[in-house]
Length: 410
Image 1 (cartoon, rainbow, N blue to C red):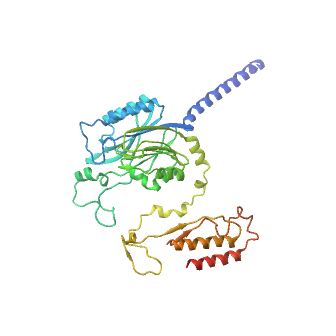
Image 2: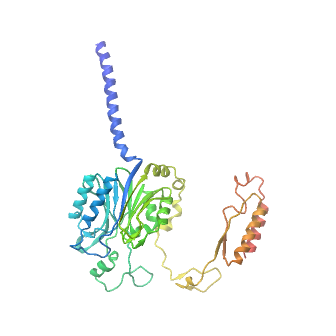
Image 3: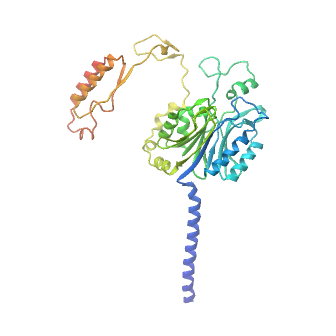
């Protein structure tokens, strides 16, 4: 019996090690996609159906888009992005989505593309479709902010034109009557977490922020905008929200680009022409930045309630203190505010700092400025930088110089 037990012990140990090896291998395999360090992505700047277009028998948009999926595959991209409503009005699912499902699975690639999704009773939605590698429509995002072109009454953009039927809106201003999305979802791809915005959605910084706070590492922004979307919008969105961004516009516009942290444009299509770009996005760096973000850790949600409230529809604009005459809307453009800014070698010498500030106040005045902006701690100096501690700081001198500068400003 003793010898039999001795034989069991190696067998049990071997079995335990084998089980541990299998489990570890499975765990590594399942988590490798979730923590993939980099991903190659593609964006296509191409025109198809436009905002108010109806289906045309002579326009085969799917046939024009599919070759770019071939190209994305050849360049080892794992996601390809097409513009807003480029597919026009289609049924979902339908013949067009069937072709994309097959192509995405065949190429082992994710696809995001915009369409007008036909709904019940002649309704429709501006929808971004997500196709995964498994031949399925993995998700949808419906545009949440309506980019309307016409309005009546006051305040501006608050009411649609009167006496117009549904056909007029569908052809002239379809986003007044589209089914608007009610959520900003984040989707789990096998390489990372992805959020989607459509055109006008991206003009609201709250949209980018919300997706980032929900865990998005990569935000896809599809557009159908004439003109080029400014790169500073994408750069600021990446920098402030710790996300990478892919933007795709129709070819009648521009600004299709791929960006990465902290605010780098990795690739960009030429404006006003059909084009294809790819780039590698460093998801490991995105995750590292997000995980150690001072900005995220020190947020003050208790101060941001105003962001969630409707804006006041005031009929007058604020007036300067002491002026009891309300100013009519539209007259603010008749005046301008002159602003000056300065920099100088700030030191621990409060009197010397004050002298610098007085100098630039006089210069600002002679140049017609109403406001002078100086750097942080420019009067006192920076504790720990310009001087050691506040133990022997000359508070009376600081109060004196502050009072004198205030009088000079008046």
